[in-house]
Length: 303
View 1 (cartoon, rainbow, N blue to C red):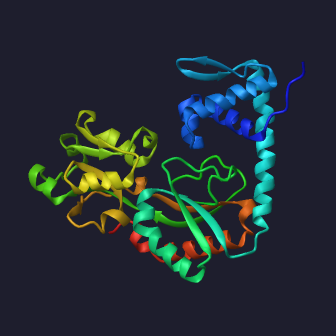
View 2: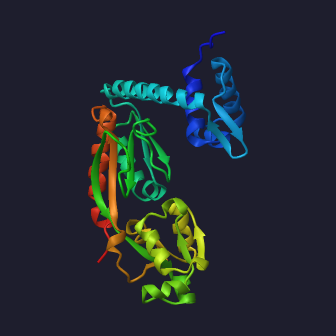
View 3: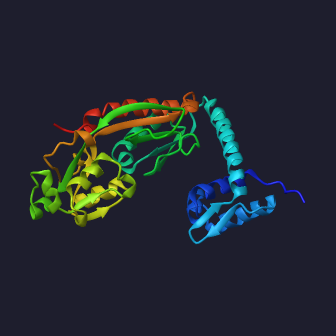
């Protein structure tokens, strides 16, 4: 008997399971429950009359048939996304949604007033802000605009607009420093409790500096959230790196007298090349870039 037809939505679930490796991770990505993912994968396998995944306690791995389907499904996805981007790019109306992927401290300290002033001029545009620690895939339309620190990532066909250099420094609460003393040399960090990022941020220059000077046994707090780390530093948990645009505005927090030019990075705005002519995306990018560029002095490390 020949294979029965299947739906594109089943292939989307197949691709997500193949990429994430477990039902739970795929369900988290798809915003559904694991039983739904399991049922839809089973439905696809029955439709194709073949097993696409090997199941084990470690998760789902592709069979030979799954590997063959994966290449076709990825090509179908690329074509579908390209068609979607091309059609969205033709929209010349200043209404609808602009999806912005960024990190929590930028959203909290910088972007809210920029969204307000943009909305004053464009009241029919909704800004949907996606707070994430991972890079949004612009080609797959996980976001229309990405505002991020550091490198651009492996994306192709992405337009980059640099905003400013971002200075970072070590900060601690005055309460912590009163109780534990002010370090005057970087080597003294080994005697202090440390607040730092999670394992995903280990490649950042500031994290490498912590690895170099701090005592691993004195790591007091880790988080992928900049705001959570700010709160921990403010409340006296330990010393830690903050962007100067956050640290300098926080009462009760003091910048330590060390300079880290090697830890500074760029604040960037990114859009996919296909969306550069979309009216609402272009309007937001131009407005937000100009507004953030005007704040350049607050982003850079103080003298």
